Amino acid sequence: MEVVKDLILRIADDALMIGHRNSEWTGIGPILEEDIAFSSMAQDKIGHSQALYNILHEEFQMNDPDHLAFRRNVKDFRSCHLVDLPIGDYAFTLVRHFFFDHAEALRYEALCSSSFTPLAKLALKFKGEIKYHTLHADIWMKSLTLNGSEESKARIQSAVNELYPYALGLFEPGINEQQLIDSKVFIGEAALYNLWIQKVKDSFTQFNLIIPNVADNKIQYGGRKGLHSQYLSELVNEMTEVIRTDYEAEW
Image (cartoon, rainbow, N blue to C red; front, side):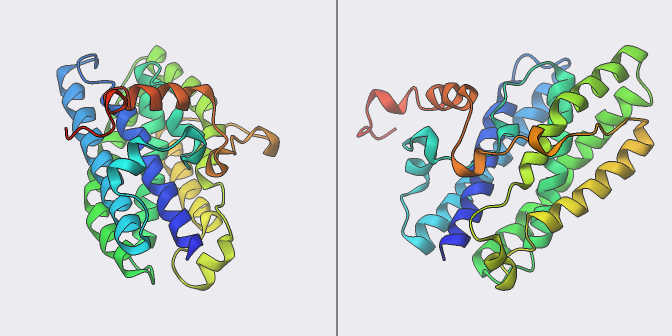
């Protein structure tokens, strides 16, 4: 069942990292409503990661969720590069939010019918929460493109151009992807990408945005194999700053 463990770890690590990145908007959002929105979504994401880590602990006898979140080496994380990146400006965060959450909404929808029952049960719960995340992303993307200024639309398009190669890295296959598909645990990253790109195309037609062309060698792969940039090292150091003062303490 190594392939199932790898799949869950990828999803959980993505959720943990994007949750921490979203939390960085608390207190500095463009309006108070967005401070609250990103704080709430951050809590959801970190809660999702904890529940997924708990499956790994209970079903596969891996370490407990706190250990998996805060006591692994950077190379042991399987998060994609998209979620590792610093928050940038609001347009950058919003576009990443749009790309990531629509992928996750489709992922959890597919996992609702997974043959691995613990994951299917969680997916059914999570997809209801993610629906509000995608709704938030869609409202603000529409607001800053169709109802915004020329500057706001240009900023969104610039963020799309920068982030699209990273977004494609969301769909980097894990180990023995075909086994996941054959055992009906998951539809596979290629099938998920096909669903996601159609959603992106439909939305970008509405928003009057352009999907950039990205050469295969420019797609930001590597995260699923533990190959990360310095951004993840910096984030993990920040996340673990307190627990590293005393690993044996009860917080």
